[in-house]
Structures are given as structure tokens and as C-alpha cells.
Amino acid sequence: MAFQPEVVSYDTGVYQLEVADPVDGGVGAVSNKPLLNLANRTAYLYQHVTNLENGTTIPPTVAPLNNANLTGTPTAPTPALGDSSTKISTTAFVQGTVNGLASVNVAGGANVTLSAVQAGNGILVFTGALTANIAVIVPNSTKTMIVENLTSGAFTLTVKTAAGTGIAVTQGKTQEVFCDGTNVLLSSSDFVNMALTGTPTTPTPAQFDSSSKLANTQFVKQAGFQFSQTVQYSAGPITLTASQAGQLIDLASAYSGQVTLPALSSLTTDGTTFYIWNGASTSVTVKPSGTDLLFVNNLTASSITLGTGDTLIIERSAAGGNVWIAIGGSSQFAFSATFAGLAPKPSSSAGVGQFQTLVGLVGAAATLPSGGTWAYFAVPYNASGQASTSTPTIVGGVAAGGTIVGAATSGFFWYGFAWRVQ
Image 1 (tube, rainbow, N blue to C red):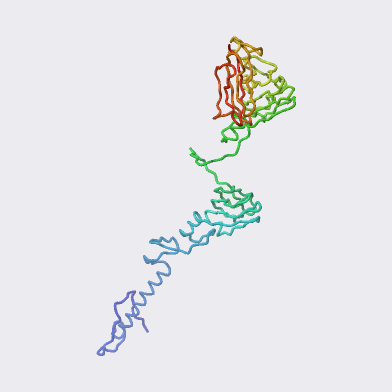
Image 2 (cartoon, rainbow, N blue to C red):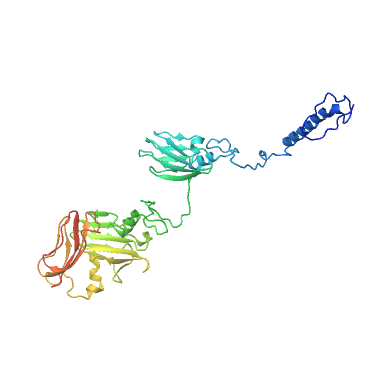
């Protein structure tokens, strides 16, 4: 027995035996033509199927499993948000991970654990009324999240992993955080040439900080640019502390005894300034601590005496080797070279040269003493001891005795001096 000599060819047709065809056998016999046609087609189909199965032949409309080069608009099932596997990521998955928003009501006082799908969103918004400090627990998956805290109630909301410490997000604020697989941390950036808008805030540096940290209005106020507060003393003696820099030290009418300045060794910032007002009925002596040096008009002094109504502005200066320098206030006028060279000289006696402090009650006017002509200068202060920066304004000049030079203004008192010049 022999086989037909088939070839790998898809024959265009299968021969039909005719009535007149002889019935014979062997290669090329008419009776074998239909069988050979079918055998050739079978061989052709077999070879193509085998090539497809083993990857030898890849049709242009089919992509291989290995190193597929997809074209057109291929699609795939979208994995659940939060999935972290080798599944194909679709645009819907990416958009949800980056820009998807999940709003979660976390009302109450219990911690809330997010599912992988919830935490898989790029934006997490928390709402509801809190009754206690709570934590929102996210999976231990590396991810960046934008968190908005729209809860109410005077309690904190901290985004964290089960074992991490997390980040507290302030109510009404939005914060970008990221999970490193262990803990939730604050995202940061090297901001260059920031142009902040709205009402930005910053932590308040330590009182005497002198660095590149951002200063806020609270730091500026306590640094002495305006009085941080007024502290009144009714009994003495007292020793001031470094933390009182920038305060108005008000010595009340019943005060008696000396005032000792803080030790210079306790002050680390050049220019630290103290303001003292003597409202006592008697003179008060202000002296440095221990062997600290005090300079008045470039001369050393053991102390400075403040009469009733006198003021003293004194600062710590590194220029002279860490010393105290009296830089302002009525108590150091007598040491000024300008005033020392003028005649008449200030005097407590009536007549030309008489020097008198202008001190009024809150809501009262500033009025010059009667008689003669007076040079004057007065500053309006509010009840907290802060100088007015708008209305009423500082007054100064020359006027006849008895003239009202500072109008009575509710909530303000006048403080200054009058000097009779004729």
C-alpha cells in the first residue's frame, strides 16, 4: 500500500468524478484526484493551525501574549481602586487613583478604617460632626493623597496607618500627604519664589529667634515693635526677666523700690528692648544686674532714676561688648548732649525752664500748664498701653499756657511733656 503524494496547498477545488471517467488507481489516477485535493487542503490547514499555535505565524489582527504591540483602542477590565498587582491598569483606574474623590462621613468619636477602594481615590474628603479626637486609618500601601477635613466639632482628625502616628489635618484645611507603606507623612516641596494669597499662616518662632524662619504678626508683636502687653506692678522691688522684652512695664502709683534689669547673660539677641513707665508717686531707680554695664550718653552709670511720669527705653547692645544702653524715654533727656547745651535748662521750679510731665486720664484732654509759652510733645496711648497709629495722632509744637493740645478721646490717654520756654 502507498500514500498519495500530497502537498501543502489549498487546492482551488475538489475534482468531481465524471460518468465517463475510468475507475483506476495509482499516482495521478483520475479516481484519486478528489482525494488528493482534499489531502492537500488538509495539509495546508494543518500547517497554518500549527504555526498559529506555536507562534510561528501571527496574523496582523492578533497580538501575542509575550511582548504584545497593541494598536488602535485596546481595552481591558478596570481593577478596583487600591489594587496593587500585575493587572492591566486602565485609564479609569489611573483617573480614579489620581483624581477620584471619595467623600466619607466620619461623624462620631470612633476611629474609621477606610477600605482599599476608598483609600484608593486620589482625593479624600471627610465630613460629619466629631464628638472626640479620631483617626482615619488607611491601608499600608505607598500612595499620595489629598485630604480635606470638612468635619465640625472642636476635635482633631488624624490620617494614619494602623501602626503609624500619622498627620493631623486641621478642620477646614486641605493637606497633601503620602503613605510610605508604614506611616502617613506630610508631603513637602522646595518652594521657590512663592506668591502666597489669602490669609496664610505660619508657626510662631521662639521669642528671641534670629534665623531664616518665617515671622508672623505674633512674633513681631512680642519682639518689641509694639508692646506685646502691659504688665503693672503695685509693689516692689522687682527683677525683670528676659521674657518681658517688648512689654510695657507699668509701675503703679503705690509702687516703691528699685527695678533690676535682666542679666545680660540671659539675653541672646542684640537689640532686645525693655520699656518702663514710672506711674509711682515717688522716684524709682532702675539698675543693671550684678556687674552688667549700663551706658547713658556714652558714659557708664550705676543706675537711672525715673521721676514720677518718666519713661525709660533701654536695650541690650552687642556693639559695646554686651551692655545696656539707654536709648530713649524722658528719664534720659537730662543726659542728652542736645538738652545739656540748651538754656534754659529743664527745671521743676515755676517760670521759664519749668519741665512738666503731661499725663492724662483715659478719655481726658492734654492741656498745657497755665501761664507763659510752652514747648510740648505728647503721645496718645490706648488703655492697653499701645501707642496710637492712626487717630488720635502724636502732637507737638509750641503754644500758650492753658491750651488744649491733645483732644479728649474715648479709650485713650495722653502722655508727654511740656517745657516752658518763655
